[in-house]
Length: 334
Ligand SMILES: NC(=O)c1ccc[n+]([C@@H]2O[C@H](COP(=O)([O-])OP(=O)(O)OC[C@H]3O[C@@H](n4cnc5c(N)ncnc54)[C@H](O)[C@@H]3O)[C@@H](O)[C@H]2O)c1
Image 1 (cartoon, helix red, strand yellow):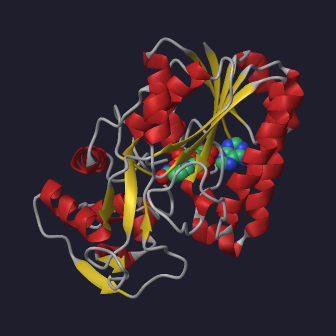
Image 2 (cartoon, rainbow, N blue to C red):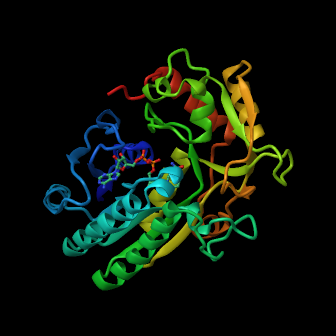
């Protein structure tokens, strides 16, 4: 299939691009490189550098790609930044994203797969969270994901395409030379690992404190007092996208993507120490505002309907991430 991957120079989109190429698809990446890396785009994918807000660039991408499917990863995704700059998030993730929907309709794209997020659920009453749980985001990032899901459903009806909205939990790991290089990095696993790299990534140089890993909150009502989160390996995530792309030939779907296994921050930390084979400097800090104690996904629906299940456990995710960070101590180094 011919696939247009927006955000394909970012962490997850770059792995998806690679997996699509490996499975025989023709890929065009569209990315403004604001948060992504040119070096993360695997050959022979075409790269069109442009912003979702730029109609001419989008048109150029659709003409180059002639896509049968759009996979939409492009977005801003830092919760703290979204709280500080909600307008930026609505503009980028919803308003500019809507240009993509319009272009997909005009170019008669038949399938659209969207990177949604567990953030649409906010702080749920019940875990594991199922897809029909109330959507009550607690930050602007989650609100933009929910708003785009709504736009997507409307657009699918108007233009006659089918869609998948995939609500990811915490994505981790690396695949085939492609890893996580967010600047600044706010995700737990790379944050822990980067404290023990001989040379920090560029973003670390700006933040000397990150030589010691700070764990926020040890008095939550969980098994060891720290937050429990659900992690999914980036390659397992990409496999789910392939299945979703296939299934939306004739229907729309919404799936959670997690492992159903929650790991506490202390458990993640201990597994990281095991993987790197040494003690990691640790500081116990206070709770951060807005962190629900436990967030785990029910992925029963995608298991039942598409036969998907995660193949990699936490230790494998951390081992793959560690290998990537060791090979790329300065990230993509652009
Ligand atoms: N990483 C996670 O754990 C996680 C969890 C849930 C959902 N998601 C969602 O998955 C998607 C990918 O996440 P990621 O971790 O790979 O992020 P990322 O920041 O690594 O990649 C996003 C890419 O989109 C590009 N981009 C952003 N705005 C753009 C615009 N207006 N026009 C063109 N390109 C633009 C960036 O340059 C970047 O390359 C995001 O939409 C994110 O919200 C990620």
